[in-house]
Length: 504
Ligand code: ATP
Ligand code: ZN
Ligand code: MG
Image (cartoon, rainbow, N blue to C red):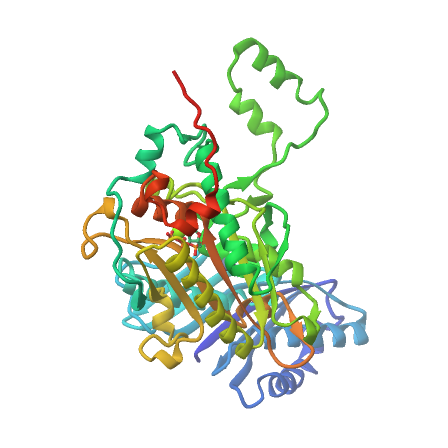
């Protein structure tokens, strides 16, 4: 049979006549339970069983449907019968062996494994997985199906490792005259507008750079978010693990987070040795410190939308409040960019406005058009950038067929990247343009994950990431640092620049 499961039950005692007692009811009970649980979905049931003292071994074999639901139902029924007849209960349940056959859609080219005790045999696409020593939680929580899904996913990932994400040009602005070909980070460093921060990948923005970053923030609010009816929220800066489990970020990006640890205590006595060591050595006693703080308990904000979804979780939004349009600009994003860091455009800490929208599919599609129109107004008439938009789809989504990429009509769920030409990187054709913001509609993924409901029908959601450092670098890379080269409407917005601080 396709699926084979061996379970061991420890009973609270032995029935008076042992095997004989069980033989009187178990086979019939198993037939009845199999018929009820498997129904038309599959065949099979209890194939062998053995009672030794208070240990009952059950072997289930099924075809078409996996047997762990059946096992749970059968164990429950056995418990009821034993209790009723002899006041014997089921103390514990373990599954020493769970064997599953399945087909991989993609034949893996390198070994694939699981973080659970297991054996995997594979011939071409056909695979046999033996999960070993599963506990009751693993059975109840359906780890077996998740393990099979994970192996399939890993095989699929191997097939597109290193491939580019799908990219299709949507719109392109007119070509603009470039006022500079300098790297804006270098130019700002030379003028002391910014200084490389005291910790990895962070920058200190002096008054001039800060003023321009805040100007970008104002333009986004006054020209895009305000006119479209978005309201500001202020959210906490730490993202809980629970939230990131729901959004999928925790499995998707664990190597990109900054993790938060807490002191185990604030009792000064507990910290005395630490403080004494600091006073004497004038160094950080890192080993001592490690013993005084917890492991990670949360992550520093990675993106703002997960916590906004948390805010709405379990709630029903009144029709009158739809589409719901909010944005956060208080949580600062932290990301471990590692080798990818570059200048002010790829940093470990950045400032972003994140608008989030929730509504019916029609409302969101209409809102996307409005957002695109207002963004275009800013980039064409205020910043006067040379920019373009592209429909992008990560390779894994293309494969799973969830997103229309060929057909413009099917471009409903997905992401639009906004990219600016950076002359310092080379020619328009050969250089990589900078993604300075994006706009997504994710469908019902997060509204479902966080149980966000409408009075009627299903809600969709989406978000847009307005990266202020990216707006700033895109602008300065094309226009330079001299206000006389800036477009008139941007100059009006910026007003008077702060007096530059002279360092000797
Ligand atoms: P990239 O592909 O450049 O790494 P991303 O896909 O990781 O960007 P998102 O997670 O979609 O970016 O974040 C939305 C926006 O946040 C981006 O369009 C960009 O403006 C900004 N952003 C993301 N990462 C950084 C960073 N390391 N430094 C500055 N801004 C960033
Ligand atoms: Zn988001
Ligand atoms: Mg990134």
